[in-house]
Amino acid sequence: MNQDISIVSLILQASFTVQLVIASLLIVSLASWSVIFGKLISLSRIKKSNDAFEQEFWSGKNLNELFNAVSTKGDGAPLERIFASGMREFLKLRERRVTESSALLDGARRAMRASFQRELDAMESNLSFLASVGSVSPYVGLFGTIWGIMHAFVGLSNLTQVTLATVAPGIAEALVATAIGLFAAIPAVLAFNRFARQIDRSAITLESFIEEFSNILQRNATQPIQAPTPNLR
Image (cartoon, rainbow, N blue to C red):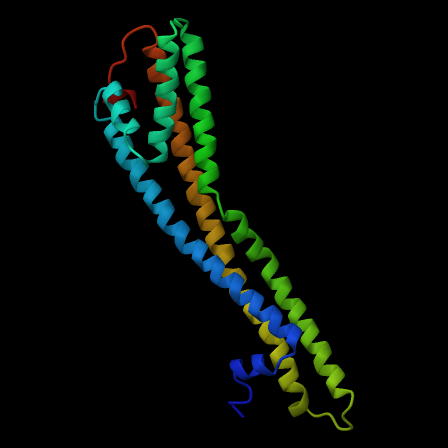
């Protein structure tokens, strides 16, 4: 009896439509777990690299030296790329003999905001997939359950005597689809909420850096760029 109602046997005995639904949900679940582990690693790496660059930035290092060091890196932190884009635009305007501080600052801020948006889009990649899995999977599983129950009752219509023993297997194999749908949806929803909070905190860090660095550029718009002092932070 236990062997007849095991999960594997229920899936094997289900109709082709229910099996197709279950297979689709399992594939989606594996894909969502792949995204989850990838996001865990990438967001953790982003936080560590941002913290390391922010510590270096406020350590008193000359901005020109820091810019040269960042420019030679192939793949740095989001803060590094935002800093490099703002600094590059600022120096480019200075080379063109732009002396008005507002023009220098506006150009640097536009460059940093554009870089910020690119970084935010990169951090938010695949979040929509997790949101879709979390919202759609239960309904896909429910569809498989409804179809399985319909298939079971159609099969029972040919029987003259219906008992619980004849109804239970068909209902059980149909309910497996809903269970797998929830199995795919719950981790995706939890991961989406966690990653969304982490990305929001990272976005606040990036925006705060843009404002702080803009203040430094504004103070140095008409003179050689000096390294920031700790009390500016």
